[in-house]
Length: 357
Image 1 (cartoon, rainbow, N blue to C red):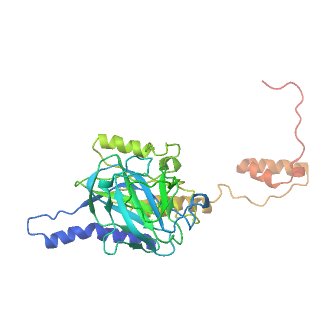
Image 2 (image 1 turned 90 degrees about the horizontal axis):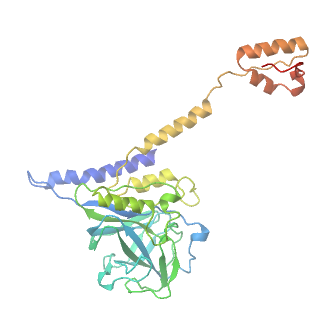
Image 3 (image 1 turned 180 degrees about the vertical axis):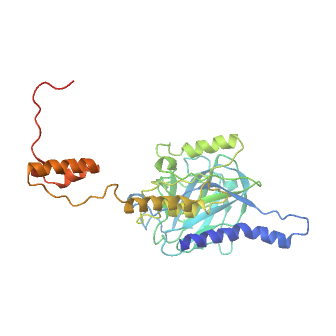
């Protein structure tokens, strides 16, 4: 509870800070214009399972090029790079963005290649358990389009941070090739590593939706590199209606991810939904959790409708008959019979003659 209160208070400062500064710095009668950052793509993070992880040798002196599909377009963007589950600081020696030639190829359009990491120095060091948000960069991206993000790692992470169910192909080569137009001979895999989100500067009033769900929300059954998950289709419909824009928050195995592979659903909800730019909550999480805890408490402390008293085992037929009458009258015949051994229940009655109609 204390940790959640700190996060909410921090968000309140972030949300209220610009307004307060605007009142102090803006001339009388003039409003200060602050950027409206809205999440256009996002992926929840976890520790990858062994079958989805990369060997440390693969991530030594390695370039990863990963393709993401955005919903809302814009002319200025920033990228979230995550070391959420790392146990040591992770250095990204260079980070670039570009427009891909195709969603299923490692090729980019060279004229669009831009460096995200500000020189000097060009590297970015992300502390353990933290997330790096790049400086805003003027880079035009169209709605319902793709973006290629390439970064170079000199050393592998102490513990990997990943989103295994990307349904999008990523590419790995050794050496620093973040600005290369193509990555021939690259190793291919359908996972994202260390990418948490992309924000665009949007018009005032633009909002986003975070889709929190199970593996179907994550894209189970969707076409690899097809961008046909149901949040993708929802984004297209909302774009056509000029409404809010889902950033494509993928949360795989919602309530099945345990502490071994990352945060539970409510912890990821706190990290991704509360911190997602432009996102809105339809119902406070504290309220939902309080209801669940109350329901569990009621089940644990619920008193039986008819408290079971010690059952006296009858020794004679007359006592058994009286005991049956008493239990029928008390409305708990079943409890009494379950607690009595079978030999104490008397003989079954045998009906003679034709059955009654």
